[in-house]
Length: 259
Ligand SMILES: Nc1ncnc2c1ncn2[C@@H]1O[C@H](COP(=O)(O)OP(=O)(O)OP(=O)(O)O)[C@@H](O)[C@H]1O
Ligand SMILES: [Mg+2]
Image (cartoon, rainbow, N blue to C red; front, side, top):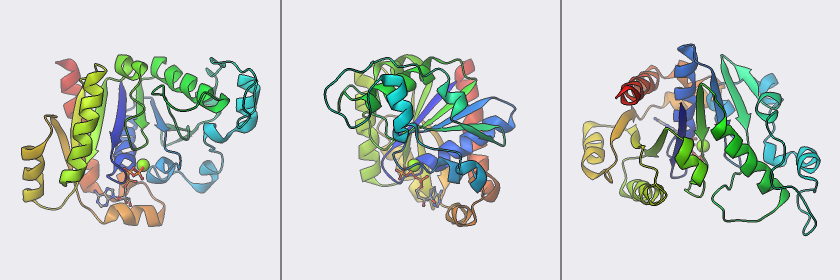
């Protein structure tokens, strides 16, 4: 099962990615969580202890590894490098595991075909495609805000794409854009998740104004999310309300798969 989480900046993608990863891990599933944000935060939301976090480095920033695998040093212009470097050992070698969640930090990913043709993008694109091809039990992709990552492989292998929104028109506007881009390339398994919902009116607003995306779940606004971050503990442990919301989403996805 491969789940990609997207949405506008700051809406709660990382919070949801951490919650879903831990729900699946606690069900005994093998989970690989991938942080594809240029400034990674998923380890924090999952409550990874400092000594494990110290072992994590975004692949995008591993210049020696990229040089070794592609044949050219990041930042160099011209010259030759391979467009399909060896990456199959990377998910295991450069990830760390905590509470049954394996976490890999990728760094900025541009897989949409735009952007530079350079060693680091060749490396990340190949790795991203490899992750989508792998037979992981559960893959959770915490995507960078934006929609550039909706490449061909995403359409073929992502089972569910979740668009996280806050109860604002702006946030729903981004969701509508994502939906259009996703549909343009043939991806239709899209869901909406409302986050930071303070009252029934805000929930109702989402039901009414959704850009035609089925609502997978609602996560209440809960100050313990920020508190968990301050305390360095998993959101999953600190916010029973969000944990329950995530558990319900996983149940809904399971029935959807069976359908
Ligand atoms: N349900 C919630 N209640 C209260 N605060 C929340 C909730 N969900 C997320 N937050 C807070 O909102 C902020 C953004 O959350 P998060 O990092 O999960 O969003 P994001 O979409 O991953 O952001 P970015 O686009 O920067 O990666 C954080 O400070 C987080 O603590
Ligand atoms: Mg994030």
